[in-house]
Image (tube, rainbow, N blue to C red; front, side, top):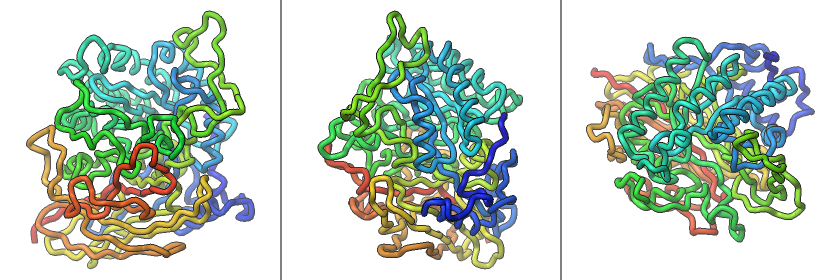
Length: 555
């Protein structure tokens, strides 16, 4: 494989005068982390799998954050329209360091498309060694929704995906909604668990260096039940690491634009016979652009964290058809179809706007992954470690989070980490924010209005596997940061109680807030749904961080 090269913002041979404001900002953050130049050189070394917590002070390394998208569809998906090169160029234009092409499963994809795309990926890796490109699959989970599955580059990456697709994909097996067999069956749910265990075995035996799974748009249809999500994690927590905290298709609610049901994320559904009956109707729309499971303080994401699970959230484009785009699908040759080609025809530029509700990769939704080296495996290790924060609309340039005991030296632990403390210990949560340095792709210079600190108790496995509430999780502090620019650090005092807990962060531009789904006493000014057709995503932007855990010992 072609030797990977540093991105231009991280390459010391590239003059600062050649960088745009965003690149200059990212270079400054890299220098601040002490990783510039040789210290951030390409290598197979990965970030440690999790904060060690071996000593109370914590010893997590300084991190650089790489920006990426794990949910991208090209002509190798039956319902998309852009070429691989169009999407790779767009990702580079909008500042992505890593991209996952996770095409929809199909017999045509397994037979033809996966290998054809693999050849394009190999050529792209050689032509642009500064960009980290992964090949993946959008798996139709038996009995449930979709998931991104992707592997580290290597001799078996495409073979792994096609073998998995043919043996375990719910659509190909008829184990999904709309199939003759009801999807909510023990057989189908058991097959999903076996699929994740099979992937874990391929990693354990070294058939592939690494492989990860992330659930996609989990509340869209209401068919990812809490007990299924817990079962997937239990099957192989090192493989099934999390979910989309915010789905793609964020342009659906743009006022006056009818392209995807007038709701952000194309969340336009109601409960069906296949839905989990314990979800309320409010679960089927986005809140501030985020899935109900994530946006609800004390909701299902928090219920997972309250068990002590590190369950990582992400965001991405899910790009199929971009808003205000002028391209249409090309015309099929006589006798050709997806089943016998593995791809749709290349698009044609019409010069007039076509329907669509998506953004280009990196244009609106960004997942930031903390690493100490630049490379594919480092990105995967960072995701697995939970060293992840996400933003919409380029709300922030940088976020650094550290938690430590006041009595200790050392940097403390960061996102995804676990700090050891004693009952009564005084802790300090340091949140370093770097504000946006340039207008976003919509021409708006984003401004962060507030940072919310969310705290929840960790009490071990839930007795009820279908419980979606974390009743002891709430917003415990809000910092008003309106008008603050540049880089600044918030130092937030905390005290360890008599039980384990976690802390996570959230913040927004302050334009659209209200009482959270479980009430103002839990979340006084959280994200709220928008009126259909009046959900301009550029003026309702949020960031979320993954959690930091605290394990409390007795005195």
